[in-house]
Every structure is written in structure tokens, then in C-alpha cells.
Image 1 (cartoon, rainbow, N blue to C red):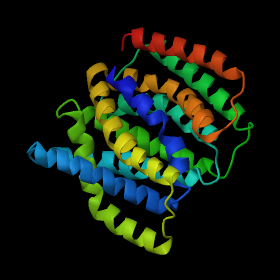
Image 2 (tube, helix red, strand yellow):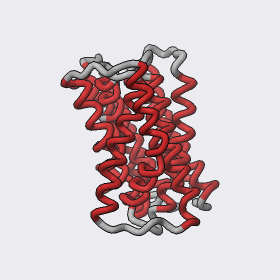
Image 3 (spheres, rainbow, N blue to C red):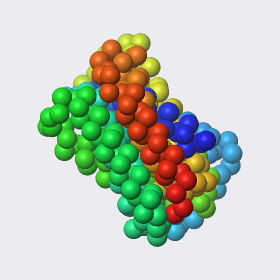
Amino acid sequence: MQAGLGVVTFSLTFPATAWGLEGFCPWALVAVRCVLAAVVAGGCLLASRVPLPARRHWPGLAVVAGGVVLGFPLLTTLALRTSTTAHAAVVVGLLPLTTALLSALRVGARPSRTFWAAALAGAAAVDGFTVQQSGGGLSAADGYLFAALLVCAAGYTEGGRLARVMPGWQVIGWALVLCLPLAVPGAVVALAHEPAHLSVHSVAGLLWLAVGSQFLGMVVWYRGMAAVGIPKASQLQLAQPLLTLVWSVLLLGEHLTPAAPLTAVAVLVCIAVTQRARG
């Protein structure tokens, strides 16, 4: 349930980024969202009087920070300057499979053959649909997108592992706080180089990215991964590109082809199989 809520939250990330880019340059948007999210997370940590994590957990928190706090947001934001949200959704379609692969290497997870078959089928269905939506071609933004895929999968894997020994909200909270020494000067420099042009869309996009995608979504996502396991939780993200496309139609006015219902059914079947398969 919590992992599913995280997926719904993340599905709004690309449309919110498109809104944010209406008023901010990519570097400023990522830095400011990180600062705002870190302030919220740090306030929660202070109010709850949470002690500092043990020294052995800091390397893992650094991976989470580099992957999901800085790496994925920056790389996808740079990609979305020239890519549509539909094309960028290819990354999300591949993310569950990549996360499962990295978790198998990192934490020794060994999903069944049925799990892998369903995961590959779901990833293929999502990727085929999103590539079709983007016209079937590859853009210059693909390098950013594939790099974002790798760093985010690493952050998810490490965050899911840490969420077994500390609450999920503390994992992302400390990762955000860890990024403050880079995010604050980054925001100052970026805004000085290219001042923001505030609008309803740009402010709403920034706030959702900071509070929703960057903090609250990660809280429920890591808790969900800790509860059901990294590989199975990651497969719920197969539905994320389709949700993103729905939001893109409603919020950005992008066109959605009739293939969406067929792909949605295929993805739901794959999710059902992965959730039932024994790892």
C-alpha cells in the first residue's frame, strides 16, 4: 500500500518538473527543491529528536543522496529541457528491472524465474508504449535519462536496505540533510546566474517536487520497500509511466494514443504476477 502511494506521488514528478522549468533553470530548480525538502526533513528530524545515524550507515546514505536527491532529479530535469514527459517515462519503465538487478547484487535477493519473466514482460510493454508515444526515435536527452536510471536504481536499492534498520522517513531525511552543503551554494549560484521567473505553475511545480516527490513520496516508498522487499516493490513502478502520461494529458495537454488501455491491462497483469511470485 505504501509503495503504491509512493508510485502515485512519483508519477507527478515529470509534469511538476515541466511546470518548474517554466520559471527556473534546471540547476536552480534541482538545488532549490533540495534545499526546501531538506528544511522540511531537517525540521522533522529535530522535532522528533532523532539521533545521528550510526557511522556504518553514512556510506549508504551518501549513495541515497547522490542517487535520488541529486543525481536523478538533475539528470531528468536536464533531459526534460528537450524531451517530452512521455519520452522521459522510458526511464521509469526500465527502473523496476534495474532496481531488481542491483538489489540482487547488493543485498543478495534471488527472485524466482516467474518474477523475472513477468518483470521483463512488463518493462517491455511499458517501454514499447512510451517509445511509441515519443515517436519511436531517440533524442539527445537519452544520455541523461539512462544515467538517471542507473543512479536512481542504486539509490532505491541502498535506501530500501537502510529502511530495514531505520524508519524510511529518516533514510531520506538524513540523505537530504547530507546534501545541504552542496544544495545551498548551488541554489545561490544558479539563481544569480539565471534568476527565476515566478508563476503559478513554476511555484506549484517546485513545491510538489520538494515536499511531495523529494520527501513525502520517498518516505512511503522506502517504508513500502522495507515491508514487501525491494524487487517486488520496484515492480509497482511499472504502472508509473502510464500514470505520468495521464497526468501529462490533464496537466500539460499532451496527446494520449488509444494504445494506453491495452498497455495498462498488460502492466497490471505483470504487476499481479510479480506480487504473487515467490522470491
